[in-house]
Length: 88
Image (cartoon, rainbow, N blue to C red; front, side):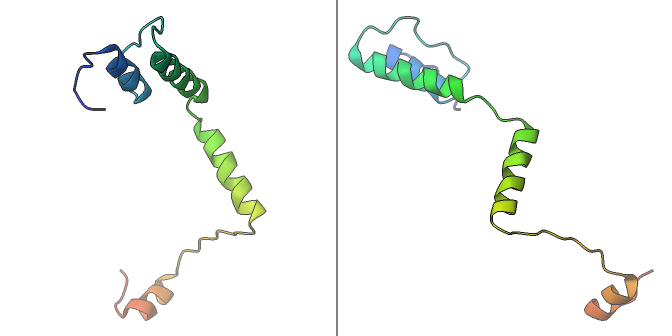
Protein backbone atom coordinates (compact mmCIF):
# COMPACT_ATOMS: atom_id res chain seq x y z
CA UNK A 1 0.00 0.00 0.00
CA UNK A 2 1.28 3.44 -0.83
CA UNK A 3 2.02 6.10 1.78
CA UNK A 4 -0.91 8.27 0.67
CA UNK A 5 -3.23 9.20 3.52
CA UNK A 6 -6.92 8.90 2.60
CA UNK A 7 -8.69 12.25 2.63
CA UNK A 8 -12.32 11.35 1.94
CA UNK A 9 -14.61 8.73 3.42
CA UNK A 10 -14.57 6.88 0.09
CA UNK A 11 -10.76 6.86 0.15
CA UNK A 12 -10.87 5.48 3.71
CA UNK A 13 -12.98 2.53 2.53
CA UNK A 14 -10.75 1.95 -0.48
CA UNK A 15 -7.53 2.20 1.54
CA UNK A 16 -8.93 -0.25 4.10
CA UNK A 17 -10.00 -2.68 1.36
CA UNK A 18 -6.57 -2.32 -0.22
CA UNK A 19 -4.86 -3.46 2.95
CA UNK A 20 -3.82 -0.07 4.25
CA UNK A 21 -3.24 0.48 7.93
CA UNK A 22 -6.30 2.70 8.24
CA UNK A 23 -9.74 2.38 9.79
CA UNK A 24 -12.89 2.64 7.75
CA UNK A 25 -15.82 4.84 8.74
CA UNK A 26 -18.02 3.20 11.38
CA UNK A 27 -21.36 3.89 9.71
CA UNK A 28 -21.96 4.08 5.96
CA UNK A 29 -23.86 7.24 4.99
CA UNK A 30 -24.60 6.62 1.30
CA UNK A 31 -25.52 3.65 -0.87
CA UNK A 32 -22.03 3.72 -2.33
CA UNK A 33 -20.55 3.53 1.17
CA UNK A 34 -22.88 0.60 1.95
CA UNK A 35 -21.37 -1.28 -1.00
CA UNK A 36 -17.82 -0.34 0.02
CA UNK A 37 -18.51 -1.39 3.61
CA UNK A 38 -19.86 -4.76 2.42
CA UNK A 39 -16.72 -5.26 0.32
CA UNK A 40 -14.51 -4.48 3.31
CA UNK A 41 -16.45 -6.91 5.52
CA UNK A 42 -16.15 -9.70 2.95
CA UNK A 43 -12.41 -9.09 2.72
CA UNK A 44 -12.18 -9.27 6.53
CA UNK A 45 -13.92 -12.66 6.43
CA UNK A 46 -11.38 -14.09 3.98
CA UNK A 47 -8.53 -14.02 6.47
CA UNK A 48 -4.99 -15.20 5.83
CA UNK A 49 -4.37 -18.90 5.23
CA UNK A 50 -1.78 -20.63 7.37
CA UNK A 51 1.26 -22.35 5.88
CA UNK A 52 -0.42 -25.68 6.70
CA UNK A 53 -3.59 -24.66 4.81
CA UNK A 54 -1.55 -23.68 1.76
CA UNK A 55 0.51 -26.88 1.85
CA UNK A 56 -2.67 -28.94 2.22
CA UNK A 57 -4.26 -27.23 -0.79
CA UNK A 58 -1.14 -27.75 -2.91
CA UNK A 59 -0.88 -31.40 -1.88
CA UNK A 60 -4.57 -31.99 -2.66
CA UNK A 61 -4.18 -30.37 -6.08
CA UNK A 62 -1.11 -32.46 -6.90
CA UNK A 63 -2.86 -35.65 -5.77
CA UNK A 64 -6.06 -34.88 -7.69
CA UNK A 65 -4.12 -34.13 -10.88
CA UNK A 66 -1.69 -37.02 -10.72
CA UNK A 67 1.39 -34.85 -10.32
CA UNK A 68 4.36 -36.45 -8.62
CA UNK A 69 7.34 -34.46 -7.50
CA UNK A 70 10.55 -36.30 -6.90
CA UNK A 71 13.98 -34.91 -6.24
CA UNK A 72 17.14 -36.93 -6.52
CA UNK A 73 20.63 -35.68 -5.79
CA UNK A 74 23.18 -36.56 -8.44
CA UNK A 75 26.29 -38.43 -7.42
CA UNK A 76 29.67 -36.78 -7.92
CA UNK A 77 30.28 -39.10 -10.88
CA UNK A 78 26.96 -38.17 -12.52
CA UNK A 79 27.64 -34.49 -11.95
CA UNK A 80 31.16 -34.76 -13.41
CA UNK A 81 29.84 -36.60 -16.45
CA UNK A 82 27.03 -34.10 -17.03
CA UNK A 83 29.14 -30.96 -16.60
CA UNK A 84 32.58 -32.12 -17.64
CA UNK A 85 34.66 -31.23 -14.61
CA UNK A 86 35.70 -32.98 -11.44
CA UNK A 87 34.11 -32.49 -8.06
CA UNK A 88 36.33 -32.10 -5.04
